[in-house]
Length: 262
Image (tube, rainbow, N blue to C red; front, side, top):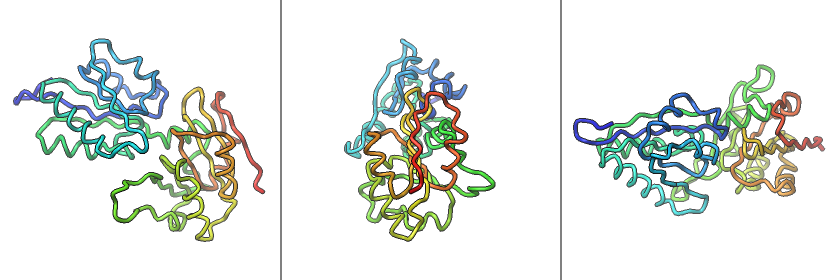
């Protein structure tokens, strides 16, 4: 689809947490229509298999530790293909506006007068929580929840996540990209005098058949994570609401290690 200036349309779209059945109808529609698909690391094989053979498929995934300039290349590709009049699908794991850089990409498109549409997706923090049986809000346990990143922009002058203060404001904290710095995060929370037995869950490969869930507390979750060989992608959930995970657990592929509070 070209506009009056001959530019193609760019769709910044969330692919959801992993299970292809959790794609939105709009996302499925755009996958079928796209001429070019720029997809990231968190778009799994089951979704990639849905890409039409006629579409040009370009992997633009960025791993932890890759140069931040990687995003510049992605931006250049969006502009390049839009300039060719192509219908471009920028497909992202989860939701494009929850730690997905969708806002940054939209700004680039605006600056270059490229038409675009943004399509939300189920963010991985919510998907992983639901598939592990952990309700992020509950009248008895959690009236407020915070979504935070465990991997901030290394070029920031001062980190913005105030780990020591989070539980002064909310009951439940969901950490994206938190496994690499798990020990530091846990220590910063504990050093503020928070309950060392506060429950913690880590959900690896949330919503997929190989989903793995471990449950412990602030005292032992680092050791348990190493024992379980937890690797990204994984979501960390901290708060009393985690206690319901074992009770509500419904996803029969889930492997769960429930650790007594000792």
